[in-house]
Image 1 (cartoon, one colour):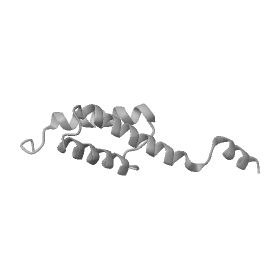
Image 2: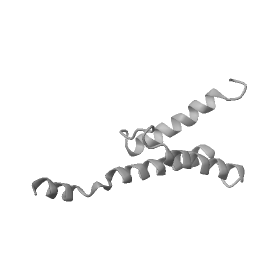
Image 3: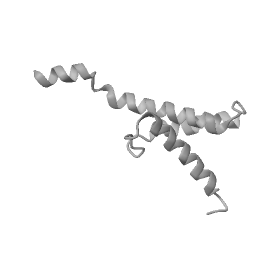
Image 4: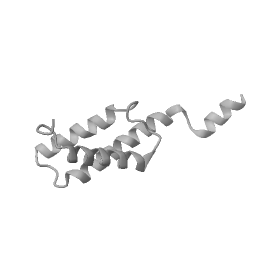
Length: 90
C-alpha cells in the first residue's frame, strides 16, 4: 500500500482535521457528521488542482474549521438556551 499512499501526508492531513475540529468543539464525532468534512476536502482538492490556492494546509484547515462550525450549528438548532429553559418549566 505504501506505493499508492504516502502515510506521512495522510497523518498530517488527519492531524489538520483533528486540530480544526477541536478548535470549534472537541465533542463532535467525525463518524456521525462526515459529510461537511468530506465536502471541505473535495473543495480544497479542486481549488488546488485549478491552482487557486498557494498554501494547501492553511486552506484545508480553514475548510475543516468551517465544516466543524456547520456541524456545531446543526447540533445546536434545538433552540436557544432560553427556549429550552422555558419548555422545561411548562
